[in-house]
Image (cartoon, rainbow, N blue to C red; front, side, top):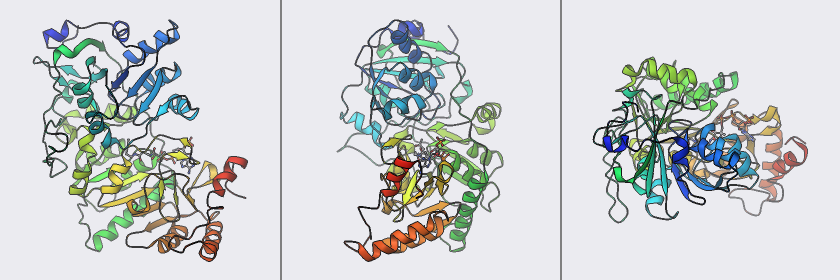
Length: 500
Ligand code: 0RQ
């Protein structure tokens, strides 16, 4: 056994992934670690999949995680058809495919709600926690890895715990986590004593009763670390609009050149926006966000960003390499927290985060769909976007104005699904321009969004719809023509394009 397991009681529980996987029973709920492709168990899920694929067993589990994981977890289990239900976020293609075929019961939740609702007992009994960690200290406490997610809750609430000690993770991660144990259920809940993005309110390790641990697996396996697309012209233009807006806010005296803690979402556009900050006239920035992408590392490297609080790393392979090589530099600048803290509405509202998230589509009134293509086909999920959007100081959504080579307009008469209601959406940005919706009534919003954000191919169609809606609508607060408002989506489903 490796010297990563310093507790003798737990060292005695080292076993193979196959032996540990054999402990999982058909039908049980398993809470696994993992968040945006980092810190997820990589050996046990594969061994579990092999019980089905190689040994022909009939085995299905309910799978809970922090957020998305990787091919060795979601991918392997989805391919083996081993998942009966899944929450709270998935971005794995095989998992997505099964969800969209109706084969996995998927509960897409605000990430900040997951841990409290598990504690409150709404989802039934969590049988097993499978948690990837960096190491075990002598006292039996667990050193977290590259994500924290819901691990604390899984360890506390599960009947039994299986650990994957992955020596691929750098031992110097120890000390870069802030695990808060001051939470309680209503009516005993107290304020979270976090008043700045860089504040520390917890301890560096997870507590875990060694008696609950039924197996320890040793691994040396890399995180998923998916690459980002190279930053294209469209994303760069979107970032430019966003920077102009922040500078304008500074001139108006509503922000200073230190801004407020930044939150940036998942995806390529969000990463490009961070890149835009490198040359912007802001300094001493802090991030209070959910995931730390390559763009955040760049900002730390050039000194623009002085601190980043998150729940997980979400780096490309080069980003992960850079993180490791410069770990001494990042050690006092990066802190990973449980998701119920990184995404907590109370903290986000208190700090006044500037929130920037990607989206699928928005309608002319500024309702945003982050998750369901054509209203029915899941892309990933709402993730933490709602936690931030509702509670941010300024909530912005970014997207190219079209998708699928221009066949889909990201600005539509009516959103085919709504994750973020118009009240939670203050600024919309496409490469065409920016719509500052603050203080605007629905009709004024519609005019701004159509004129500033929609693509020229679709703008005349949107104007035409909106003019007729103002003429024929049942009421004039948010003019709409229900028999027509989703016809663009129907046309895409029938013809492969929203264009007539
Ligand atoms: O799919 O690659 O198959 O063509 O969506 O689109 O333009 O690369 O944008 O990577 O920024 O992702 C909303 C998905 C945007 C992401 C979403 C298709 C498009 C492409 C990706 P293809 P882009 P991004 C906190 C924040 C929810 C979670 C969240 C997301 C793919 O931002 O998952 O915000 N957000 N979390 O073709 C059909 C449209 C489309 C469309 C895009 N209108 N119709 N397809 N696509 N718009 C962090 C966490 O919670 C972890």
